[in-house]
Length: 461
Ligand SMILES: Nc1ncnc2c1ncn2[C@@H]1O[C@H](COP(=O)(O)OP(=O)(O)OP(=O)(O)O)[C@@H](O)[C@H]1O
Ligand SMILES: [Mg+2]
Image 1: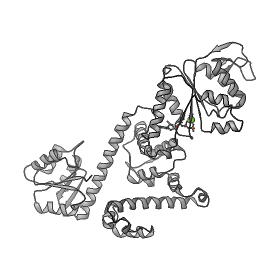
Image 2: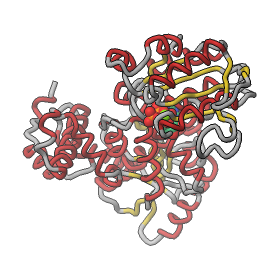
Image 3: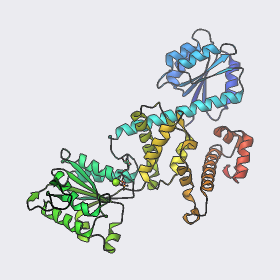
Image 4: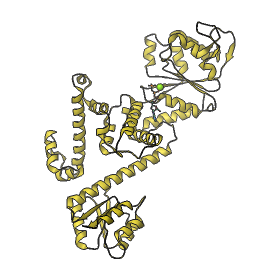
């Protein structure tokens, strides 16, 4: 949709100049010859941007800005006569985006308008994403892709019951987050949520961790200790990395699940436990069974329902939503000034293959946000690993032959090619118009196109 621009000046020749600078095709233009008429048009026609002369009879530009500018109103670019810049500065304080001093170059006017509109679009996009985020409950799995919506709906369903759930998916896809969410939305939410990472505990201590022990039951058992099953009584036990457990321990867990009771190591007393079990793994349990490393009977017991968390690269539509979520959260947590991504950063984030999934995205955004020196974060400020990953579209077997610098160059080249392709598509192969869109000199764009072996004629319809 074309943006609407209102041209406000009491001199017809000045309005004509603005029209010439902006061209007839790119925008919807309307004119007003004084502040009152402009105010009426702003309220009825709702322009996105107002190019406004400051000195006009009756209602001047500054009064107009104060009357209709501000949140939800159009962006203002003020035009002032040489020698009266002081008033323009006042207009900036009153909320104008920028100002131009007469006589100005047509290119200068065009660029200022394009910058203002780009900022307006990003602001609107941010606002929309913020609203979407607010609509999602806090600490929920963020994402609007079909795959994540399916996961959320499965979580809702299993939360109402006590069935055992197996969460599968690559590292960093949100398995632990999903487990917590199942617990919080279940009737057990007032009970404890106990987590145990089976891979992080030395093998000979796993059983004591799970079932507890009596004092003196083994060297080092200096006091009686409750195990995770006991502590999770009335709540949920989350067994993470379940594939990393010995076959003996697996047999014991199976028995606990069937009998709903435990005995501490070295103890005789039978303790009843009422525990809902959720397990997670990033391994292929069927393959583990084939290899004789996982018991098939336990497998069927723990996966009454299996929920698969898809890798981030299979749901690219969620990347920006997640990135904005982590950006806002980081700004709030660290009390930082506002931050946003520019178009180059957005493109790069979307191009990466995210081998570390959401965890990698989260860490990377936090790092970029904390280190950013300006409000706007661009691709150049994102870490090298991301540029390298964006180049990952090349065949995997060639990756080893390439140096990191080569990969980064390839990523930048892909990225530039993409930007130029979009601009040429938009301008239907008109190189001057594409250069304007990209805010670069026509000559420079032509050189770039030559290097990248791109032809404007391919985009002419
Ligand atoms: N859809 C999502 N929305 C918001 N945050 C997410 C989402 N998915 C993952 N996260 C965040 O990403 C990080 C990694 O998620 P989590 O620890 O749940 O992954 P995991 O699948 O358990 O990984 P691993 O297999 O390595 O243990 C966490 O900080 C989590 O809060
Ligand atoms: Mg985990």
